Length: 360
Image (cartoon, rainbow, N blue to C red; front, side, top):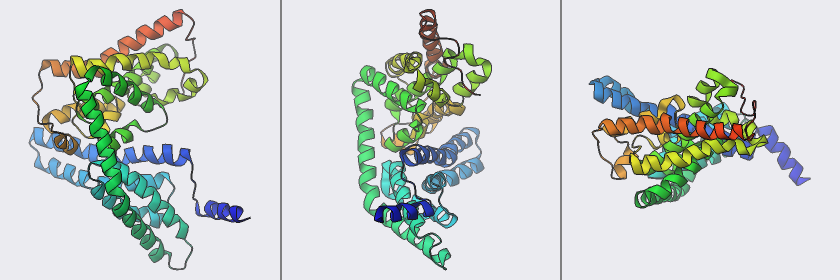
């Protein structure tokens, strides 16, 4: 009986604790918040500096300064937070991001979820909802930030540093592992951008992560061209390879061309071109979606992000080989490897016409 009462109350208040709502919806939304603040602000800053437009730098500065708030509000929106809870997340997100340090995005993720659930518990339960709901949301959210954000941020930052250190020490092996794993995460309904941001992946490891994401996006776009033509090529190559998830669930072997491309692309990025992604860490997990990944590499050359600077990266003057590396890793290698593997698999009857068809 007590369980039913709690369940009914949670349902009434819109509280849903599920992997789909939190692990997929909220995490993906966090990446969107980062994109609309830190990432786009960094791009504006770089353009302002390179083009000599100070006002563009100012705009970019305003955008990057509200990253914590943008992430928290995005998470709240995904969790269907009531208005007063949603608006209160601005303060919560800023606090969690500031207190989380280098691991701020991951701290914001957990703290914002706690704040949303706390706010929902009291939302519209009193005649003075205007006061009670924001008070509870902010008080509990910021308190949680003080307690949880520093250790969460420290753990995330340490894990990110370990991955980056290992990639520097063993660029071939880690190039394969980071590229393959992040590429798979990108295609699954989990946000690779949010994962890379939470871990602060930049430098050589950031480049490997980017290589894996590009391999999956371009790889699936090319491998499925026979089924989807130009529309599918653009939807997956510049949009997302998640469009293939329904097909992969039915026939996992379809993953082979993209995974093969990521296994080749990773070490090419780390060993051959030594490509570093020193823009915002979120760029490492974006691949060719809106060309955000390659743009992150380029902006990182001229103006390394705070995460990259903290990792010891500096301003870099690119040569022809560096520009060639971006083009090869982002497009050429994934396209060639995936096409070769997919063609072989079609000849062997492992991939049939229509297997990679998507709705686009």
